[in-house]
Length: 448
Ligand code: FDA
Ligand code: NAP
Image (cartoon, helix red, strand yellow):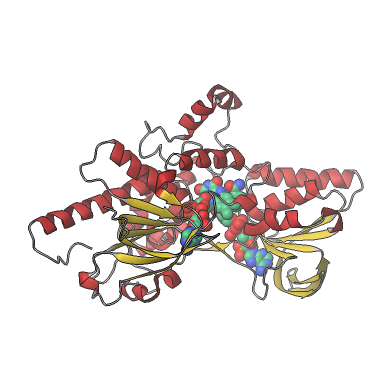
């Protein structure tokens, strides 16, 4: 339980996106159900308020999962935190149903997430960035009852150290730029798109380019075509054309909760098959509707004799030369890899993300986290990092576990069930520890 003179919690969540929001709700619902041992929890988020990929909240962007894959429904269909409950409380349920669409806009889903987070706000501290997690100084790991988190207060908040018997790290995907390219005021990663775009005088953007052939690239290309009617928009893509995201029913089964077991307990061969056959459900692919929408625009421009939407296919960005307002993009293009350059007023790199990577946050503690032959964290089925036996505190990951738990690791599809599994694991381990303390047997190696 928390002790405010010397702040210690049973669980501290690092990052408060949808994953840890779902966990906070699972904990609250466990409390409401009258769980015998209440688990004390705090969630730390570096943003000043809740925000889910705010810089990609483009007007017509829709969700890539059904509204039923919300924060709770697959774990607790009767939850008051469901998307349906949200619609009901907004007085919009009949209209939503009349609309006959499983995929709300990202803006509406964002409003749902904000509504949900407001109901667990007493457990969240915004403007708080966790800068390191460590074993308390002068303590041997086997005696450490909790881990220490260094929390940098942003926006006037003071910095402090808090204790956690378990940490659940959910700090999200890491933006990836093309090699030799750094973000600045004219070169943007898609994750910072709207913020950087709004800083510009749109009239000065006469030629813009978007790199990539994934969902972010296609959505941004469409947005720029709408917002900059005077400008040339160049789509630079490594593929011959955008490829469709496979969301057909059989393929979609890889996002079912049961697929996590099939992946986790499967052979190397079966795990490899998941990737070989189904990578195109998520990576470097685009919703069919957006593809058709873009093609229609290109065709309409052609009919109207307008030449401003350009698709540069089989092309990769190899670098960028920047000087004042000039931005020259270096390209390797065509089947023979011809090198060419393109001058633009702004370049958007919708070049994807790498998986969540907590190594630097863990510092020396990382040495207690065991790794497999490929250098990835070894993971328990309950999303707990396998640690050296003497470490008693739990380190759980929400994200960064594609190698053990499969494709849902960085997605929303399995959040509700995953959060329930983590709460179950933490509860069981705390109960075992408390029993252990009660019988006064001191340190137990198996409570990890
Ligand atoms: P998320 O990135 O949302 O949250 C992590 C949080 O941690 C952030 O708020 C960050 O500020 C905070 N943080 C980071 N470091 C910190 C620190 N040291 N201390 C404190 N806080 C820290 N998936 C899907 O299934 N369906 C979909 O429709 C979409 N749509 C989608 C759109 C776009 C534009 C992107 C880029 C991605 C998606 N995704 C998706 C995938 C996406 O990963 C997923 O929707 C969630 O964002 C995953 O939630 P998390 O909470 O894990 O990460
Ligand atoms: P992505 O799917 O990883 O796509 C990145 C693209 O950039 C790929 O086509 C990649 O090509 C290309 N690329 C990388 N380096 C390049 C270079 N140097 N030159 C040219 N092209 C390069 O990333 P994303 O589109 O950002 O999508 C990430 C996640 O966010 C996905 O889960 C997606 O579904 C989600 N998302 C959802 C929404 C929504 O819900 N509406 C919106 C946006 C994104 P290669 O494959 O050849 O490397």
